Image 1 (cartoon, one colour):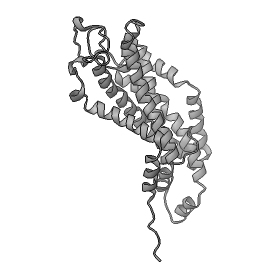
Image 2 (cartoon, one colour; image 1 turned 90 degrees about the horizontal axis):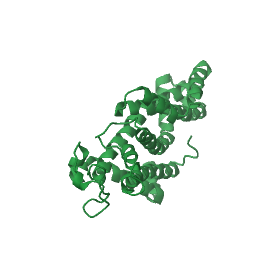
Image 3 (cartoon, helix red, strand yellow; image 1 turned 45 degrees about the horizontal axis):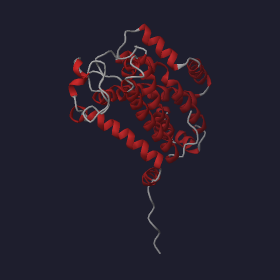
Length: 288
């Protein structure tokens, strides 16, 4: 009697993911936002609204069939600017996590694998950095530097590596005593091979989960900087700047601030739902 075919780990994870409503909804929201940013020049109703244009005859129009999100104080279509604003938010996520996560992961692996003075030096530095609130540090850095997208990225990334260093350090400490690590040492594998071919692949699921959860927080911090005037400068559309500009006309012109704020909530919720779903798929018990 033949044995039933064995299912691959990738297929099983996809099956669990597809049966998880939280993960599917989160992934759908994230994909919608990514697709909207890529197709923004073709799907937005008023592409010129992202430029320094003024149409005082259309200013402060409420949501309607022509302007779904209404118009702002100079007559620009808010929906168009929201969709283009997602470009700034998602670019911020890619750059901040793309620089902070590898840096923190490498430091965490080194501290967890080698121990001793390497662990003391890296982890005590991490503890000091963790004691500084990231938003406060981001505000300080952004206030010293001239407001721009690059400086916002730098301000957010400067402390974001710390959580990933702490996470990977805890995982590496647990994994370095596993039998397959000892077997790799016995066959002559070097430290680089053990770190990047043995430890890192086993740390990837928690890292992926944390990255998906962090993406929403990065967007919120970036929007906070822009709300306070320390982010990207007009006329480039940015969600935090739109909320701040529209706040001056509350409550009468509520759509100018509330709808861009709902757009921030929408994308941040998507990343958080996706992270919760991935945590269940990868069976990650705790991510800190």
